[in-house]
Length: 492
Ligand code: FRU
Image (tube, rainbow, N blue to C red; front, side, top):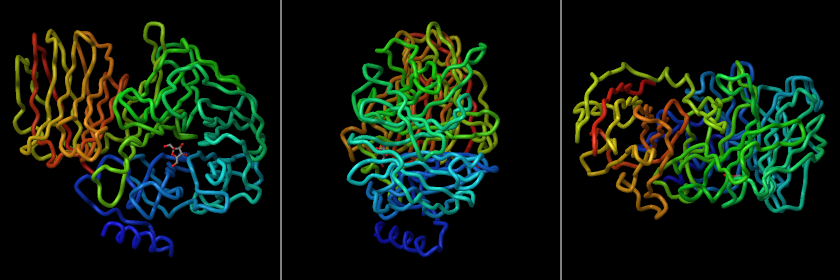
């Protein structure tokens, strides 16, 4: 049945009767981007042009499991409302269309026209090679370059080119995943590429293949310094099993990236199980660096209980850097555009939590879709937590262990969990807070993202309750804390 519906929707699109319409269903998110129908994995080719954020994505239009990869396409003027567009890139004789990036060729370096949008992607055929395609109509249609591929190698894993313009040397830079390392190339015209360096052997986490890199510069908040950030997704080898995103901070001179941290240090970008293939927009306005991840995990992405689509993205997150003791770390804050989705705020009076405390009506009407800010102060409790639950006995337990300085998220009893033995899990994030903790929860119909202390740590987890969690209860063990809450129902 689902397959038939999807095939029907796909056929309509192939004959140009698109844009596809999303079919609603209980686990279809509200805050998050999902494909109208079909399978999605990595976000690709994110680039901003003339007031539009473009989002391409790994897409199998004909089924809700991974298959022949296309680039799906959507645009948004505000990062939170998306218009689905027809498929941008179809498989061809060089292979299916794996992940990659897009740039705006303002100076016509490639000769396809000044201001052309150029997609750089992996052709996944017998070998993995890099190809380009260009659009001169704001991404509405693409022509593949006749002399593809533009970069080849004999490595089996050689993919996911992220390209950007490196102004000091006035040339394009590509960072590409090559097995257990990232390679850096440069080009004057996006067609001829010169190898510059490799990064990664002996550095950070290597529990799986390195994929989907990114490389960009950011200021360090409250200092006069800048750092380059190298994002490295790896699968498996994440802290809770399966897929995850690590990053390195350091310097880049147009040729080589140098990690400034000890080689064995691992910096995770997110502390949940469902944050992968995260990359950032090229050319975002106002110097912003906006990231988007695929909100799933290769351990079970093709088994989650959605019906007409599989996978959502994370919400967009604005990145910044902060210094803490000797290290520089990434902060991921929800992009401010999300606040347009806030309904009328409900604030609670400050209360002291001793043992347990329920806020009766707080979530009753929210249908599982809301934002909730929790501020915990005067923490003397050894453990301070809350449970989200429903009348079917499904529950999430989230608690801060002050002794361990760790926030835990337990989804072992969260609802539908049996579709994969890797799904029931407890994730844990180190937290620097002493006697104060702020948590911003973004709860959607099948996920909960928690931004800890403004996004200094983030935890992204899928959940599949059999009814929305419509109650919340707070508790304290071995002491007390003061609690204030602000609740915003979702408003489209
Ligand atoms: C990451 C990834 C990429 C690849 C794509 C294929 O999730 O494995 O390395 O390009 O998915 O769909």
